[in-house]
Image (cartoon, rainbow, N blue to C red):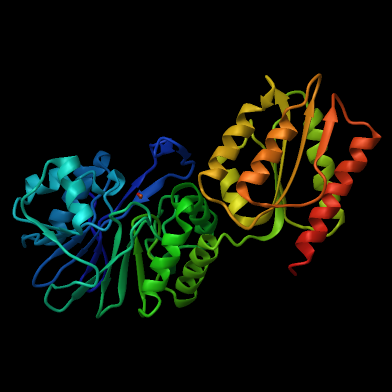
Length: 400
Ligand code: FEO
């Protein structure tokens, strides 16, 4: 039997670790798993914040029963309805039929749509408050961080923000639950990957949410994934990271994402990468799109300001995995990137034309002259790759 973990006097962690699922949302790899976090505040009225994926409902409900210690469950606050958090809702309602479900109008629509539950739902609006006794809750609607119904709940005496997906990470929380009990560095890259994969399209709503929360004093960030953030420097760090990511601000560095069937296009990528280093760009990340998961390529594209994409021509189009990557970048409304591109063909070139179209559609700043290679690398192509790398390095160094 797993027991709830007491975080502070009235706050309990009831989350679970998933080390079984291969792909989050059936899309994003989970080599280090993921946690689904749920919390309970015990007071005159007891309030639960979100549930967990249905696969873990047994363990979760048992933890809740122990944490309640015979007291009733009065409220289920739903900050987010995606089923990794609402999955155990119907079972919870069966076990606690008197629990009031608390959410906004969109939440109520989804509760009915997903679970056919209409009764016992308390609809709140932005800024509404709910007293539990000693603890007072304020609701902040934060639509599209990550779904339209998403909201955050602020507890005013202990200054806890229950933030939903925001500030969440991939990766199970092994051992420690709060940042004081583990090495926070392990989670930064997985926070960027979670953001870029799952929330990345919604930069503007994230900015609005950060603005809404900016006047709050926050001592605990209780997200639905990953550790609880409590150390002031860590709280500043993760909030700053979200601010930067949602503004699409990248660090100095270049991601080179390429496809290559027989290694010729890859030689162009290697040539450009080395020249970037010669020019003083220390963060150069090469991804072979046939090997690297798009999840990790997207993470790095969110991290760095420079992006160079290369592709052979395949069936008079882009190499399919490159096309797929571009669709992922386009669907995230990626902004503020310096973009270079190169391509190859054997008898008729199409890749560079398509990359030019992508550059125009994305409104990225095109840097350097695109390089197009026929069949294999000769001196002219080599020199053109060097020039492209120099142009990218010069552009990035302008921002130092
Ligand atoms: Fe963790 Fe949008 O769900």
